Length: 159
Image 1 (cartoon, rainbow, N blue to C red):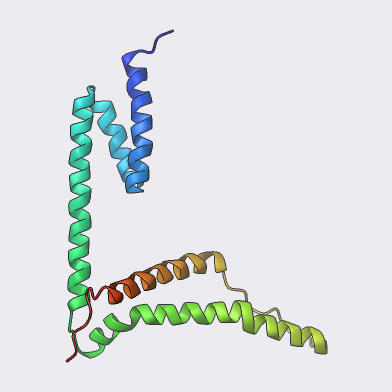
Image 2 (image 1 turned 90 degrees about the vertical axis):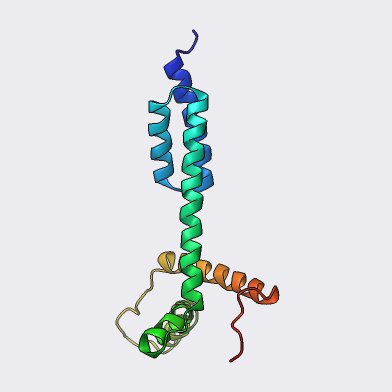
């Protein structure tokens, strides 16, 4: 049996919805794409609406980059300036301490406790499933910053 135009539209929208979702990685894009497919019936109308969404998404990303650039170029002083400059290293140091505890120090303490048959309360466990994505994101940003330094992009000028 042949498909009705409604069934064809749903099949096409499902394919495009997946592609848009992969491109933009958000549930909002999928939802908007679904609404567009329900409202607009022709392929041209759907394509025009999707192009508009892509332009809006690009503008949002550009504005976020402008905010990030202004934040990076800030020369704020006092405590607020200090916090603005050290929050990334502080998070990195906290992650490093958590990894050191979980994989080195705790293991060593457990070995000593077992060796000498000491009776203790259980040692605290950290949720590494939550921590590791943060660490991987920080490492990715660190690699990006290293690349920027090599290419001499966005380097702080000596005072």
